[in-house]
Length: 225
Image (cartoon, rainbow, N blue to C red; front, side, top):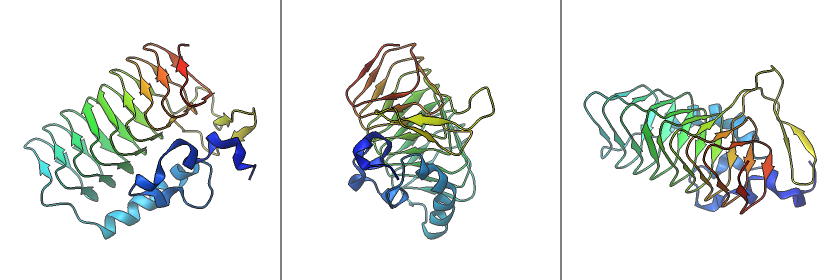
């Protein structure tokens, strides 16, 4: 492993992990995207150990499949579909028409909004993806907000593994052909933006609406193009 001074490719640089209930996913000095390699086994194992809260509310017309864990005060609105295995944290809202599937791990007090799809992704607490969003094979840190219509694209047109460069220009082959975005705590993304496969954004970035963002961006960056 290359020196941890190259920072942004390591999870502890992007996320306040001590706050995250499922921080074990990131143990062992891994590169941040390697948590997605572990996600399927982790979610599958945890749903066998946990049970849904009696205070969760599944409204009439919603569909919640097998192997889904709903935390305390979770609300699943009519015509939403949660397909297991999946874990939904306390206080999260799965709103009308949302689709959550395939080893999604969603933290507490998140909003999964109308016509939003979440697939094989990790969302930490306080994430808001409220309107017409696609989140595939991605990791979103605490309090990340995606504006309406934002897409986290997870597959290149050409069939090659996705690569990430750190801030020093070192290149890492991620070992997978599907990888969406990795977004640090507190980052805000404007409406109808697209984050291209393997985009890596540091903490507290701001992405302008309609931008097609790619590559690696340090903390506190304003991304206009």
